[in-house]
Image 1 (spheres, rainbow, N blue to C red):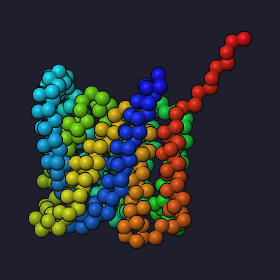
Image 2 (image 1 turned 180 degrees about the vertical axis):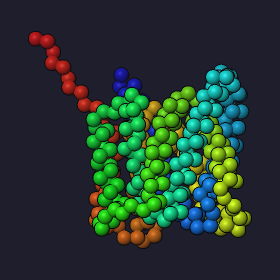
Image 3 (image 1 turned 120 degrees about the vertical axis):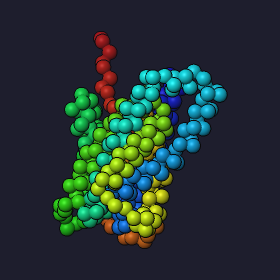
Image 4 (image 1 turned 135 degrees about the vertical axis):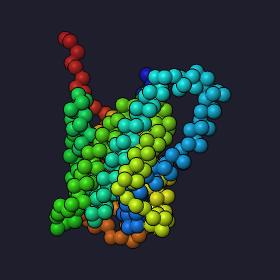
Length: 316
């Protein structure tokens, strides 16, 4: 019994660690996205980072397939089955569609001059939409998770929004819709990650996402090589680190995790972005922002606590 409990604890810690690493990488990506939008359009930026995601994962997937064929022929045969291929294609398409939608809406927010801090706050509202949409789909979250979500939203407010208050700009609507789409992305991942390999699912989401983004780029934008070249450093970071590594870690880390608990860990990207600015760029970390960081950390810890159950009294 103890061995089983230890194994479960190790698994949960490992998955949480992967999601935390995802948040760390994402937290450094807001500035790159904002800078990249100065010379290219949203669909050009999104299609480029998606394509880089494909290129960064394809060698790994091919290597893993060869290893399976040599050492795990039964698993290799399962992945050749029509059922596996159907789930991989459907899951990859849906994940790619929602990832494209979320990333593009976020980029449109930056085009319309949404502030980076405010974008971080609104984007992270997916921590609210994940359990709400889950309720519509018949999934219930325990009360402690709802409390954790409320504490996290309060923390995000103190962390991202200045004392003078919150003003709504046109770009904020795009980022708000982005939060809803990212919530759908998290829920779709949870559905398919138990049916197919997480790394292969990530590759397929980038493949379909890049096709969709490239089509939209060809219809609505006229990118130039000079503009693309100027945005290349931002595209490389977003494509390799944020997409190829972080989004893949998200998929692998979500396996076996509650969607709401996973979204709370992922939302720590807002904390990371503020702390990175303080540690690396010399930005001032105010008492207000520090309090927000503490609330966010408390919310994540609360979400990981086991459910308390009343022990029934023994019969007399």
